[in-house]
Amino acid sequence: MLKVNSINRGIVIDHIPVGKGIKIFDKLKLNEADFPVVLLMNVSSNISQKKDIIKIENVMDIDLTLLGLIDSNITVNIIDDNKIIEKKKVEIPGDVTGMFKCKNSRCISNFDDYVTPKFKLVHKNSKLLYSCEYCDELTTYVL
Image (cartoon, rainbow, N blue to C red; front, top):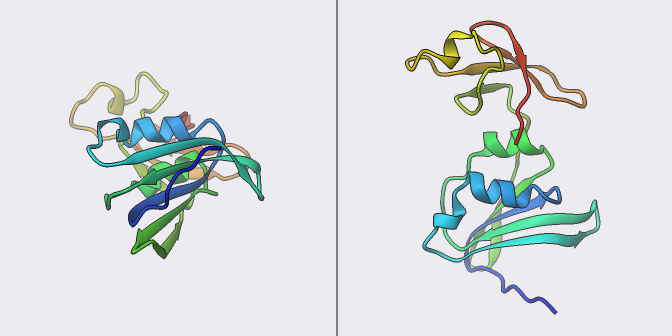
């Protein structure tokens, strides 16, 4: 039996699709943390049968835009005194700045160091498509 204690003060990132927990762990650079961090994979879930969970025993800024790009069903629970004091639901971001590159190799954002890639969401259906602000090329975020 695997037992992970509750955290007194920190953050729980919950409802992560199976297999994406390790990628979020890497993106948030939690391997460099000097406080307790736990990644649980393939945990039973009533909603999706299996999920990943990240528990962080510390208060830190979590990039909700990044989590929204990964999956809009992810929730971020803020824990204090062993209780959930705030539950944040992530959303698919409408505007994204500097989180990924334009797939058009000739786009100015790919070769000018002073230009930060900026995108606007143009489709929300099964695939997230973002239009580059500089060249209008459609790009998807790949984790």
